[in-house]
Every structure is written in C-alpha cells, then in structure tokens.
Amino acid sequence: GMVGRFDPLKDHENLLNALAIIKSNGVDFCCVLAGRGLDQNNTQLMVWLAEHNLTSEVRLLGQRTDIPDVMNALDVHVLSSSSEAFPNVVAEAMACGTPVVTTNVGDAALIVGEMGWVVPPKDPKALADALLQSRSAMFDRSAWQARCTAVRQRVETHFSLERMIENYHLAWNLVTE
Image (cartoon, rainbow, N blue to C red; front, side, top):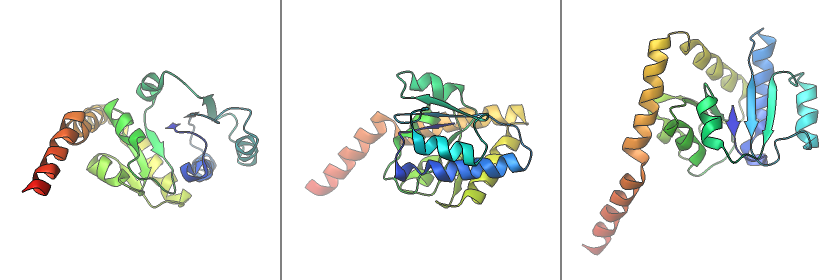
C-alpha cells in the first residue's frame, strides 16, 4: 500500500502502471491507497483505475486518522514519487516495521539503505519488478520477519528524534568552533 496525498509529485499513475504490469503477470494482490484525495470522488484516479482494470485490486481509503494502524497492516509500503526531499512516510512505515519499495528520490534511498528496494522514478517496470521481489521475499517467513525487525531498528538507529538532536548539536558545535 501507499500512504500519501493525491499529488502529481507522488506519482500515483506510476504506481498504477506498475500494478497493471503485476496484474498482467497473473499475480493476485491488494493495494490500499490512503491519503487526502484517494477516494472515489477523485475523477482522475477513478479513470486510471478503470483504464488499468484495477478497481478490484486497489482499495481507496481516503484521508485517515489511524495511519500507524494502516501502516502496520501493510506487508510493504510503496513510494512511487517523482520528487521528494526527506520522505517522512518512508521512515514512518519503517518505524512500524513495514519494509519499503521506493523510487530513488530525495533521501528515500538513504532512509531505506539495504533494507528495502530502490528503483528509478517514473519507471513502472522497475517498480513492478521491485514489488514482485518484495512479494517473493515474504515467502521466507523467518527472513521476512527479520527484515521487518531490521527496518524498524534502522529508523530507530539513524532517524530517531534523539539522533536528529544529536546531529544538530554536532553541526552547531562545528559552526561555533
């Protein structure tokens, strides 16, 4: 699934193109989309879903107040953006123990490190391949559980509030020395 408002930079069309490739390979899946504008009232989104015959596979949750619950329910979080700075949603998913497939935008690759799958933006074939790789990885339940634990630990180690404060102090000390 993917959490993020409907916005051209989030490139939901890229995700839907990737999902269409996956469906054409005969793979069964369910993808949830949560965020502002991700509901049946979004005419553009409904057109794309119909064009790709994905109305049965994609669940539109709209804007939610229970995002941690949504992220904990996902097997994999996907970020299909064409541009980002520091995509908080990637770190948030990982903090929930949810592995991530992401496009290589902003700091996304830095956040996931070796724990996730990183593909070029605007490349639905690469995104589909990474999603299929993540799906295959789930079949080894013990390795998958270890990955889920590792993604949470990575965020705690590198991107926690404490770590951020520590890095600010280091930067301020360099400036004042």
